[in-house]
Length: 305
Ligand code: 13P
Ligand code: SF4
Image 1 (tube, rainbow, N blue to C red):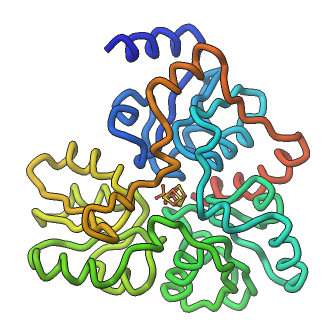
Image 2 (cartoon, rainbow, N blue to C red; image 1 turned 30 degrees about the horizontal axis):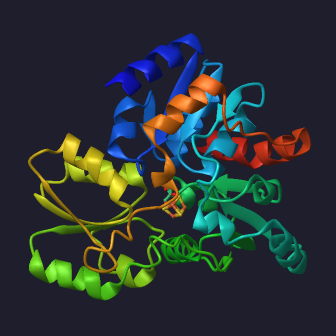
């Protein structure tokens, strides 16, 4: 209790807001000023009047908040909270790749570094990816990076043939078709819902595919009573809170492996949030040139969203 009182006092004193992604631990979701998926978090970061943003998520999300608010102090509870998907696309490799396809437009999933964003024509999130890609003419040549699973999903939905960077998320990519087949057989009445970072072998069985916010909305509106959830475990906290009488079964890649926990998101703790506020620890800084170049494709996305 004391730590929550300290956080509440400090956020007032410092004129700070705490932003949290749905994949963080429940106790962090419960104290956040704003909780959302990556699109909603960037929209909130663009609009907040607070002087300081404490971003309980992963590094690329805090970086995006800094890009949108270069005059504000952006702090991250644990600077080691990276993202395996963002890490699968290194700037030096992407530069070389892009050079081979100079007549291609570049659409990047927000799960990438600021350096990759500077090389992009537009950014997207899983909430708006289809809309963003569809904003290009049908015959436009497009590179989509870094998530090959999301890219493949959009290619199928939009009948396009975007060139896909070979990246993926260690949590979603590990889910196996046998797991969801088994869970569906054990719970025939359940709806299978999946994040588009999962492989096509999972998505083909899904009753609904969407970003974390879209999955959450679906569980609220659906008349089904049971859901098999193929994404990170953190989202279950809100699903259960908003639909207390429904049952949610996480599709783990192996029995009781906890491998659906994003180890980076789970690095966020209340203690670290308090330390950020108290000592101004772990400030996210980017050089002005990177901010200027990375901002353009993010703003383009926000204008289209
Ligand atoms: P959302 O866009 O659904 O928030 O997804 C972010 C993410 O990191 C999924 O792994
Ligand atoms: Fe990155 Fe995967 Fe974690 Fe999402 S779940 S933040 S894509 S490592």
